[in-house]
Length: 236
Image (cartoon, rainbow, N blue to C red; front, side, top):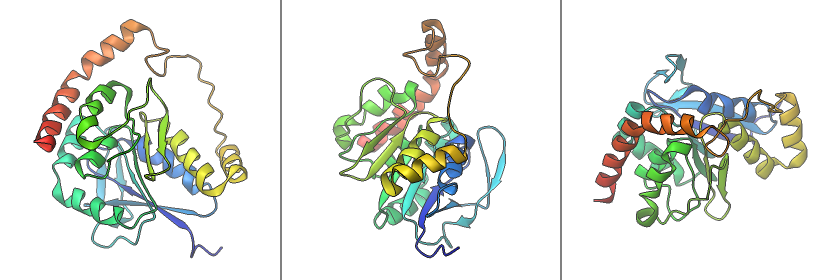
């Protein structure tokens, strides 16, 4: 099969990123003709928030040209540390100059923001960190959609952002639909048998019991505080 004209989706990984954020989207893109997925990182081996070690296809120094930049989210140490990592930030700034789309899922939005890529666009992130992302609204001229969308697509700016973790599948499938059309998206969805029908209905705060939402917001306060401190540095 000729892959010369494949759209290259580059997942820019970092220590402490979240497995499904990039693995889920990788599965979707890899299941559709016309896409090639690669994992990029500053190091060969990356350890995810789940303690799983994965091997990148390329380091930043030898990576090929990327058509779609995809930044995954991660845990507090991984995200905040990467927001301060100039090697990582400079790399994604550089490739974002020639990509056709740039985007993130989950808390990867904060890394795009730190790199200055997330500007003048519609954007979302993990449900508990949407108010934290809102702190950047004026500085970056962000428009944050209401409630807890699975993804947000800014067609004019060619920026995509996703909600948390599992939404990477929805986000990638939407990008397949945009770039390859309905039949390709339907074929991909059928191939991966992606027809979510969870046994419970508590996937975001609009559906989960209030006491569980409150408990998880409390648990995420430390993450919010760490992100807020880094956002203050960016703004100032």
